[in-house]
Length: 359
Ligand SMILES: Nc1ncnc2c1ncn2[C@@H]1O[C@H](COP(=O)(O)OP(=O)(O)OP(=O)(O)O)[C@@H](O)[C@H]1O
Image (cartoon, rainbow, N blue to C red; front, top):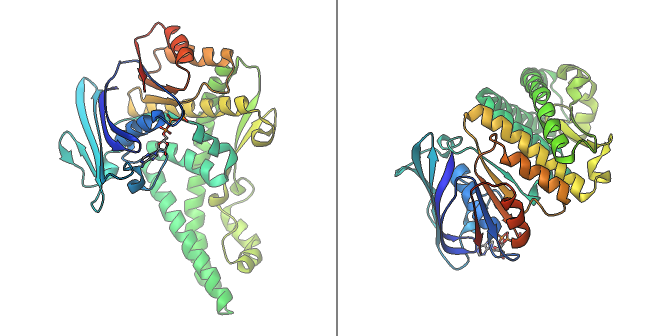
């Protein structure tokens, strides 16, 4: 699968640009702030119906304009897929596939498999556990629609349980019966979510390790571990143990909404002890493992967006990544970089079809 043509009107700082792309490698080079990432984001928009970077739709319209249009023609399984995303101030967003507007945007998800690797992935290391849960939940949900429903339901009941705990505190009352109904439902859903996350990590971690070893030539050992309170005891028991605490703080302190991924280098937190290049290598391996999952699930080679990924990596790691994407296991690739010479040197070494767009 690949993107053949792209036109952008008033998307962020891109006023009016059109591109015709190569099957394999396309690079955008230019100075800071020129709009390289915004072009990748426009491609992301076509695949996901939203920006990767700015969730507030209106803020993606160019300043002082009142609409944007992103228009792309993909070729998937020898068939053209024409996708147009547009937004006008005061109106609803429109996503069209081959001229027909979707009623529900969720129907579009999955048509254009795509993975983006960007400096903002750093959030997976530096932010709280919610960011990491969201990462695995997104990958698992693509493989298992029931899982997504379970997550939504679980979250809803957690909110109800928290509201009940608050009600007890405010009204100096307590009703074990009502609380136990929520506990039972959460136990059922949480046990399933926990098991699915465990099963997923069993498959995901070796793929992640394989990519990490390739990038670093096995020069450093990293660990990716799933942590859950449910590893210790069934959720019903955890509710029992934490009842006094939950009533005191007026929210639910145990459950799968507290799960986390531990990201480590040589058995120490990579956030605290990893260099910038080591953190970046870790994140690239994580995203390439995600690429593998989406590839398996969709049956096509996803598009890869590399936003500024060579920065902070040494020449050896850059070479390893380039050799990897040279392989048949990867498809179309979009790269942004501020250094035209570096980019040219890197892509030339692949001996693949490439184009460099100077912005
Ligand atoms: N809605 C908008 N309207 C106009 N400009 C915008 C809008 N949203 C973002 N921008 C501008 O886009 C620019 C950033 O573009 P982008 O992130 O694509 O740059 P880049 O070429 O990738 O830069 P770098 O090399 O620094 O990563 C900023 O100047 C920002 O102010």
